[in-house]
Length: 327
Ligand SMILES: *Cc1c(COP(=O)(O)O)cnc(C)c1O
Image 1 (tube, rainbow, N blue to C red):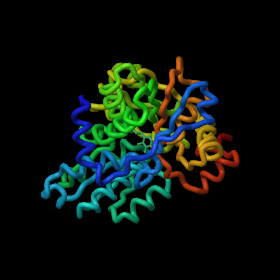
Image 2: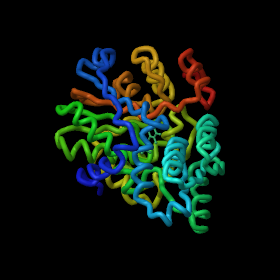
Image 3: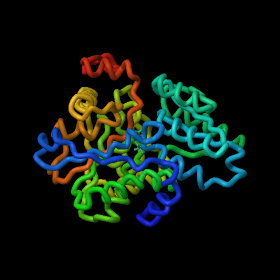
Image 4: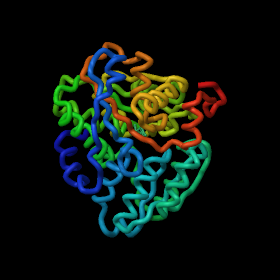
């Protein structure tokens, strides 16, 4: 397990390479919830998501020889962008394998950073097979969540949250592979054991939720969603994020696409923030009143903003999701 000390070490390593993002009060959500709600504006992080924290922590610990070989990862888009950025900063080169479900705007940002982009299959699991093939040829894998350096890097958000809101009672984070949730929960509970940490994900394709219910990592079918960054499984051979989420998460909340769309709209209209679907799930969970026994002060992590801007426009105006359903 990753603990507070490891996360503090990660912060020392990455602090000059990443932004410490602002944490602001949300009058509108505080009104909705009847308690203080703060927003951790992590979507303002360089590359547009928190994934730069973990990717930077991993890249900075590679040997010169490993950097020279080049790094490779499977990604739903944001880890690929972060890893490409971090690799370029140290003179290494990234290869990013993605499924066809990854939105074109994310793919093109990764290309712009000079990465070798490969689109393979209709799920993250199929893209992972290409990663395995290229790792056998000598590239160095930097996985998107199930790795100690990634979890420790994402956990640095938790340190910043407790420093900004020392009496925080509930922290709400997006949940997919569990790197964000595991790292943040380890940091928050390491500093403030009485605080609760809640993971939020989408109803369809919630691999971590299904795995927690089953007591072991299981595979679920992957579907298109407004929260595309929450797609993909947790890996049947998951070593770190599954046991950490099982030990540390107090609750997991599931959302429909129309609830997520309402979160994106609220972020834009009330908070004046552009967030992608995965970045809006905390807001959406509060608006849908799906966090049981909510205690304040509450802090939500707005985790990313890399939404196709045309899709954002359509969500604001009320639109169909990728499955053709009105949201
Ligand atoms: C990756 C990602 C998540 C989920 O993080 P995990 O570590 O996979 O659970 C949430 N929000 C955004 C914007 C992401 O890119």
